[in-house]
Image: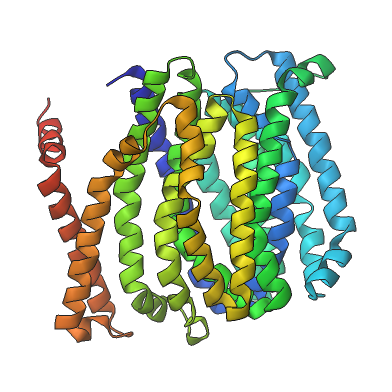
Length: 481
């Protein structure tokens, strides 16, 4: 195994610990808060996230990524990035707070304004910690990041539950973010060891501006596309429908986002170090893709088969529609788990401008698909959204693959075995449900656990049958003294 792949795997282990820890916290939060708060409050939070997510992209203008991507970096540049991020973050917070009433009127949701005002506090806090986190990621010190993120997320969840019990409604989500970001900032400053100087250099800022501005432009365009569904559903279908949709999307995204995010975070510094050795870069990238596919394929296949029973067991009746939405979103989840790494590939090789150009075209396709699906309600939105992913496959992957010399066959070879094994697993589960209908009844928790166990067994059997060397390698490693 090359040094790059070894570093990537070490980084992924700790990044995965962080993401798994946050996943458990997020799942606990969803299950608890869904019983304390109505779908309309989740809808208000989704509306607020449309604005706050965009504001988050503006708070450092892609400068934190430049810390990771550059071959070398000076203390003067670090201080310049820190102070510039703080200035941007503070300005964004002021804009969000001052525009809260106008945004609430746009969404026709008067209760949205106080949520946005509260969330405005988050931006200067997170901007002050972005450079510190980027330094840790540049070092691939994901062990420290894992400890900070799990502890901060836990404190944030406690704040949200306490606020919901106290009757603060959608404000509970805003308080959760405030507590999480503040705890993270304090910890990151201590762990990173970075203390900014009282210097700011225009020349240093100019040295990264071409890269960071193009990256920021892509993030903004991509964000509008990613959140067009929340805006359009909230604007035309209302807070309750948006709450149901956002819950389904969040469930789909939780395991995939945590798998892909943990791997992508470790992948970025590894690819950045290999940007001048394309052969090593390709091997490292495809290795990461394969790992993602092995994890995400069975998760999404299982969610597709068991969505109805999962929702019935873990949520109230008011969330029943989520199951139908999940059946459309599960295949999208697998697709996105792979495609989210493309941004890392662009960034690590310094191709921020092609990333912006491709992202603009792809984003436009998503927005059109969502708009076309609106007349059919939330089910129409998710169905058109899923179809759009198939249509944009070639340009989405083709451009970055061409830049670094990866072929579509390489992608196929890296994902065919886990994908085929997941299809076999889902086929077995569908067959079991037909032969034994009682397993799939809504209140049968034992039946649900049985199906999950059977899925894991048959997926493992399919994998070891098609890839026996993986099994043999695992056995050899266990016996190595």
